[in-house]
Image (cartoon, rainbow, N blue to C red):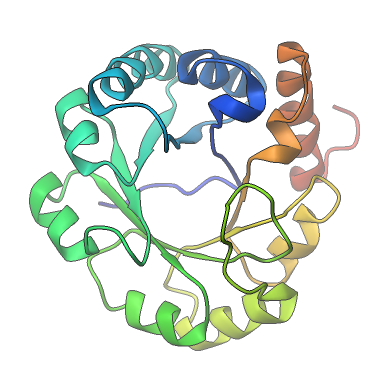
Length: 216
């Protein structure tokens, strides 16, 4: 599937934000996000499915694209726009076979070798990370740094859509794009606040920074 990959790629986290996935999508989209990944490691499949359905209703109001992390079965049943899988999940080829050509498939990598291998698979984008130290994963892979992003971009070429993830903040996001990423995935930098409306403000501010519009 051909799709436009925005510079900002927020990922939801119920534990961190204290909000449902639908509420997070609303706050992020009100700030201008148009691609959001739903990440859920704790809910049973039935409950997560219900949350995805509600989040999709919100996303459709904003014309936003919704990706589900890991759970291809939930994504397919709910009618989400795609699935993101990691190195230890169902292989991207199997996810593509399940979802078909009309959906988005993303794949996590943690170094040049994995990224090059991923670039030959039926995926719409390749993720590289963690770029910096991160607390959003219990057992994160080794940090690749900006040099790792540059190395992956040089190895896979310009034809591959590249999402950088891991420890990226509003301050470091521009440098990650300059290193070769097409998009930056953020969790804590947007969601780690008790004020749900702050999520919208942070999203809007970051998008303005990435676009070079300091007036917004």
